[in-house]
Length: 334
Image (tube, rainbow, N blue to C red; front, side):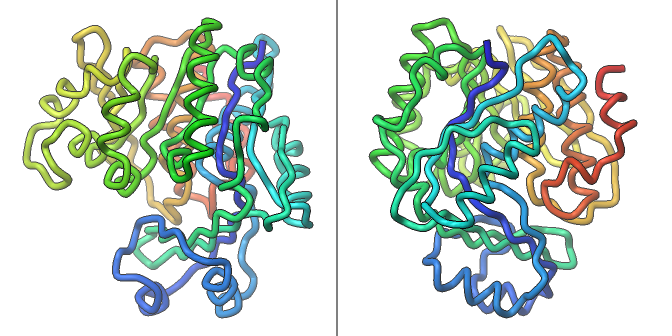
């Protein structure tokens, strides 16, 4: 049985340090993800040579985190990843780099180029993403490996799968099939703009299908009708989200996270670090939490591991687990 099977948007991430004026040339909304055409990403890359290249996309970042945590664990199979890439060099690189990071890829090849994301990291350590989805958007039901999806302990995906109708249909089919096979379903709302775009659809469809939901405070506030900048207390927002999943995990930045399960609220404090780059913080959080679940830790410990991994990933450039100290990995199971 696979530990986790993920379905996501394969993207080659190009991470660049930038000043505020560079970001403001392309957007006024720093710290968020923007869907753009390939030409804009190419323009950003031309103006910022020497970018760090890492296989990315939210789901791939999470699965790489799970694989990194499980490296010395013989009791769990490494993760597998389903997505769509182009018949190009970037698609080949994505495949090889996932393998090198302990994740087995099951990639459908499309004629459209592989998706790329230009990530600008400003002096405040915030990341702003300019993403061309490319071949990602062409994943469809026929690309699914049903035996793979139904043979996992967890199926994981993020709300970005709702961005095209064919991806959404593939996601929904896999969730239903996996759930019927007894696979646990973990889902990340992923981004406030995902909730803005698909709030009604997500509210209608997700309840009853999820075992674990990951979201930050802003995303949950929107999903529960409080609004993006609601002054409501964390606990009030979290408890209003109980209908969405058996376990609801709310990330609250440097404060850590809060977990709701069977009416109980578990607060897990965060860890203070000096951040360098916030790319992949939420993705690594989900990876750490899933690792805790796979190794049968308490929910408090799952939250503590997730906080710890997320806090460390922001101290290195990009969502690059291999840049973390090997001794830190051992500390996750202590």
